[in-house]
Every structure is written in structure tokens, then in C-alpha cells.
Length: 115
Image 1 (cartoon, rainbow, N blue to C red):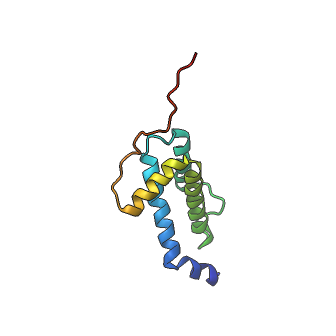
Image 2: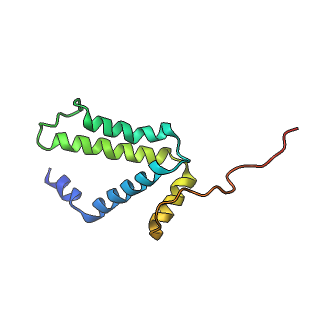
Image 3: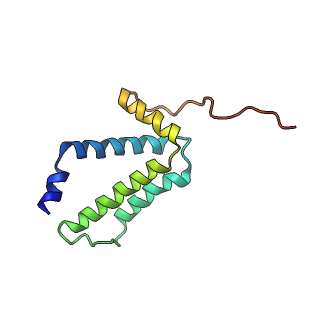
């Protein structure tokens, strides 16, 4: 148990989790991400609010780790389900420190004439 807590206390893990949360918040605002995909983090938040759990919250550590695990698993699934070009655009924007703006429309479609 002490080994797990020591691993959670490492700054790199906390930094990684915060970066994933910032990326997820940007992707939630992105119009190119469908509402069905945006339902994944919403379902995780509903899990945190609703009274039923995999591990009840009155258990000292296990109850809170359960909620945290579900939240971050949902964020990972959400980022995985989002379109790759959109995720890369927002990762680059975060790395460069730019404020949020939707991904500009570009050459993501094929202009053709159907005969």
C-alpha cells in the first residue's frame, strides 16, 4: 500500500494527470468531437455523483481510489475516441501555451463531383 501511495506522490504522475485533464477540457469544447463521445466524461461525472459505486466511499482509501480510477479511465477513453487530428491539434496548442480556439477547417474533406 505504501508503494502505491509513494507512486501517486510523484510529481510526474500528477503533472501527467493534470495535462490529460486540460486536454480533455479542450476536447469537450471542440465542435468536431461528437456529442456521443462527449458523453463518456459526463457518464464518469454521473458515476461520481450517484450513490452506487464499485467500492463504497465509506471504505477509507479504496472508495476514493475507485472514484479516481473511473474518472481517469473515462478521460483516457474519451481522448482515445476523439479524432486523432483534433487531439494532435490541441496537444500542440497546449504545448505552445495557446488559448483555446476550435480546430480550423482545412483540408479534411475531398471536393469531388459525382456523375
